Length: 476
Image 1: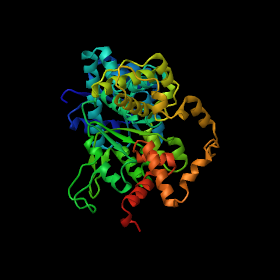
Image 2: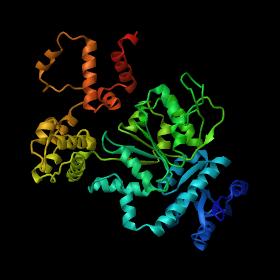
Image 3: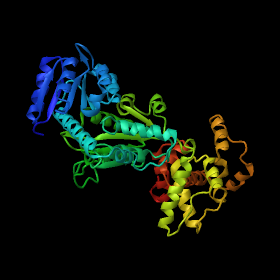
Image 4: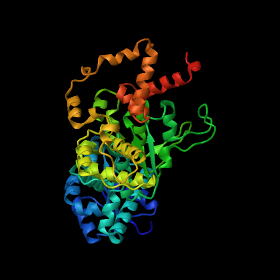
């Protein structure tokens, strides 16, 4: 840290002196300017001398947002932390979209300031080392780790990943189930300076409500029944790295309040603890729902949504990715064939056309499962063209998907043969319900969260019902 310089751009002398005092106590050297022109002059005079910038947004000679946009070459080389008043949060978020590393709300907490500055300086250092030591082609490959595809929608995703990788901005990934939201989060993590630090993933819909707080924030021994020892939560486990919150819209409202406080303060308080603890974590979250609709329906806090959705990334469904479908299928075919000790030739043109006309409601995960079954069932080296008709529901061809999408909500499909209902004759309502739930879970590859969404109920409802069916003596 010795020799690391911080540029403080703040026109209120009492604030800039206080910031410099906190940072110098932590071992940094500080240079203070009170306007944007002097800031640009300092950075051009010593382009590689500064490790980070603390920038106020409202300055005598201009707007900090305009400066970030006009000085994009500087922002690309040096991490910028924006200091903002409560009333300008939206502008601070705009600053992060322009490349700022992080933002803080005034008055700045000394501990939070030092922690954020330490992370910003590390990002600047890592970016300079990468520019010096890493060939451009290698950087591009590592930025797309885990993804396969050359389609235009995926090229846009790759561009967004590269743009956000070196920032601390929270990222909100949306997309249908199976489109690769966790792969996207992992690619962002590995593409940035936190890549060698922990990547901790939590599925907010798979953990019962009464346990999720402890899983996230940890607990102290004796803080509740079953807390037999102190435990570090996922947030602290991800210190220095990235916390990925999947199915974030499944989080209960009262826990959303605590998540918002964590994001605002950069501190966590374990269940049963009396003092908060500082953490340095980047947050990436994901959902297969429409978060704006969840906010409108009152199921998700608006202030938390805007805090999380600083950089939104929407993943395209597989059916919109064209020839990527064949690329993915051949990749899975090669991988799973090797695992099975078999050799397969790439898909024929006929089979590729069939794959690319399929609707893939389960997206990449459905394709992956199909290719795994195919490598088990076929001996090779070619896949039989009947794979689509044998292993895939023909009603999910793109034409059928389009028909279903056009159908008004909550209107039953009249093409369903009524004779099928005779199989339910003599069954109790409870038995019919269990049959429907079990079928939905099977169709969702065992995921209760996805089955709950399919059935229009909360995951906790399915957990309770299945526990009742599996342990009938414990039900009231």
